[in-house]
Amino acid sequence: MTGSGHLQRHASIQAYFSAHRSQRTSLHYLGYRPCSALCDEGVRGMVDSSLMQGRPGTAGLNVAVVANSSWYVLNFRANLIRSLQAAGHRVVTMASDDAHTSRLTSLAPEHCSIPFSGTGTNPLREARAVFALRRAFKRNGIDVVLSYTPKGNVYSAIALAGMPARLVVNVSGLGRAFASNGLLRATVELLYRRTFSRAQWVFFQNDEDRRYFVERKLVKANSHSRLPGSGVDLARFSPRSARNDRDVERPVHFLLVSRMLWAKGIGEFVGAARLVRHSRPDVVFRLLGSIDAPSASAVPKSTIEQWQAEGCVEYLGSTDDVAACLSDADCVVLPSTYREGVPRCLLEAAAMAKPIITTDSVGCRDTVDEGASGYICRPKDTVHLADRMLQFIALSHGERERMGQLGRQKMERQFDERIVINMYLDLLDRWRPPTMDRRVLPE
Image 1 (tube, helix red, strand yellow):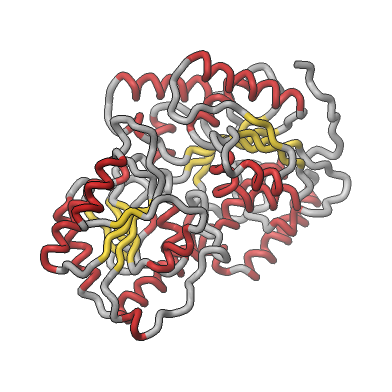
Image 2 (spheres, rainbow, N blue to C red; image 1 turned 180 degrees about the vertical axis):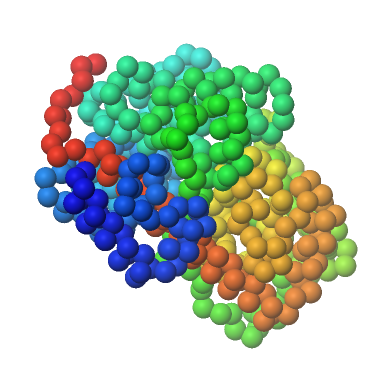
């Protein structure tokens, strides 16, 4: 970009900041600042997608969006895909097929089916996914890979060996492998060190994970930055109309939204429900989320059925309309000890002006201002969680509403999805050349 181009873009960014004060607040929260040398050190500028369109003499990039499932891409990256397309980029999604693939192809018609195996560890099957990615990258002449989920990140890096395409990794938490020390953790660290060194940029969703990767030299210097989680769609997840007087007087409804994994705090939630119901048997406790395939980390379906028979919790199953379930809750709870990025369910709940209760754990604590927009409890402490729930129950209706409003304001300041999208657009804009040779590499 020429010097005059820097000045023009800087003027556009300054005008954008002046017109969007809430996003300027978000920028300071993330530790960025506008400057004229935007490309000298990381990704500092935030540019609205409208500023990315219609730049004369530039060409769009062939962008692959890689994740382990069509469900993930559709639910978490749909607005990013729309923004990439609006900015003139060609988007090819690469994920395993599932019940959401048809809807995904309506959004992004170019889709490559990749045989990701979820939690599978069969070497031959995993190798098939890597080779399928490599073929898809070559066949589509991919310029930039935006990868998500652990397998999507690692397998994309391996598949790109010797290819000119750039890799942008998103670390959305470290998961079960980093929950304790041991051989698994050491093995995963080694894998990250050898694969992430190939990435041109790594986005982290919280500062703890970023510091860990930097201290352990798992990422290259000056090639990483922090995102505010995945962000939240503030239009889709917005406060619904106030309940009528009859609903205001109903018992408190607590909701936990998550895959049914022990590390997500399912057991602590149920244990706290039992304790609360000793003194408040009218309070309602609900679980929402899919049941994983049987494993040591998954809560068995039979256990959930026993809890329902006991009467301490209701299990709602899974849904594509999370907003409707959040709307019916008074407080959303996630007592997770999983190495989260920033839990999307808590962002969505707070965006809908729902108070939240979560643990003082990596990623989780970032979503709440203690005592203002919700409460923080100690990890793996059922009694403390129950105390926090009783503390919430004791609030007046007005106090609960005020708590929800503060949560919504926090999401507007710090976790607007547009912040995330604009940081991706800004990064890709650095790599948009005046012209491009669209040769497809041989397979």
